[in-house]
Image (tube, rainbow, N blue to C red):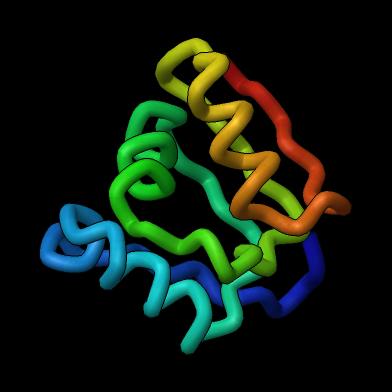
Length: 88
């Protein structure tokens, strides 16, 4: 993490709508994510973003085990150079 980075605490109306979350990530050029793995799975599953690779450099997942479904969704929807850390 770099010094001077911004923290974005997203409101429920963005977090509960997968397309709104994806749009927020892209518009605000977020490159790091700290999230419960089941929430990320929900977002990637229902956002329908087949043609977009999310620009994360690192993802920190916590709260739940990482499912095989989430692993496949991340392979298809996130840049391959992204570091994924399981904090569970």
